[in-house]
Amino acid sequence: MAAADLWQLYRIASQYYREGKTQEEISAKENISRSQVSRHLEQARRLGIVKIDVSLPTSLKEDSLTGFLERNLKLERVILAPVEESSGIDGIRDAIAETAAANLPKLLKGSHVIGLGWGETMYRTASALPHRTIGPDPVFVPLIGASGSSKPSLQINTIIDRFSEHLQGDRFFVNLPAFREKDFPLTTYENKRLRLLKEYWESVDTAIIGLGNKESGFSLFEEEVSESALTRITRADVVGDILSQFFFEDGTLLTPDESYHTNAYPAARLRTLSRSICLAGGREKVVPLLTAARAGYFKTLITDTRTAHALYEQIRREIES
Image: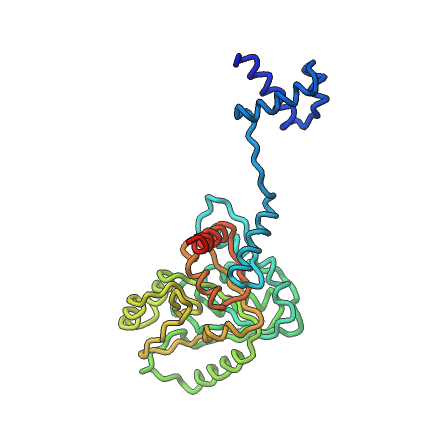
């Protein structure tokens, strides 16, 4: 085909598809019949000058994706934070934190005793929360004891304080270590605080938690527990942890090491709560998220769009295999 003819096809296609002109308008401008315009458009598609892509708008694609995940993971709600394909882990955590902060005031409406976990995304969410009222006299309590780590994301009392300040509730601080060797008994005061904490745990109606993969859990345990306990966890075929309680790919929990106590809300009880919300994202969290969702450890997931697509692909592979 002559260059002049190809140029005419391109010119007609541009007017129709890019400029939005009608075939009648193009016919008048090009001084050809309307039927010739139609044939030229068809020829432009056939030659690849015009490539038509049919896709849902982003919002509808996200609605379809959340619906797929809710159905296949039996979740009550999936909320997605938009991220760019090039986003690193910090960008993912910030996006989830901002989305969680925007949605949590509504999700927590009517909650009375709200238990909080720790982690990078939890910490960032606590800082991003707006100042809102979620109900009469809510109280925020830790679901795990204090960490001796210097990492801000593991300072549970800081997370508790920021949630209670922003969402206008009361707070209960913990001075008990998350991990304690059994050979070191608690003081009378510490035992009293532990009893009070466990009383609050009996009344928890909502939990907000992070989720770790195997490697991130190990990095914490290296600082907090004995070498023998760490070795036992390292050798176990676990995939992730919630509240520093490790679980296998079938959702069952690793039996705690007998040499230490973990001061944490029992992960198995998360299944019984009316509201349980997980904030987590990243490709390394895909298998732990699938496992924890299927085991019922949370009912609402707030994650990013990239992780959601990775979850979708993993589920599709399982369905097709």
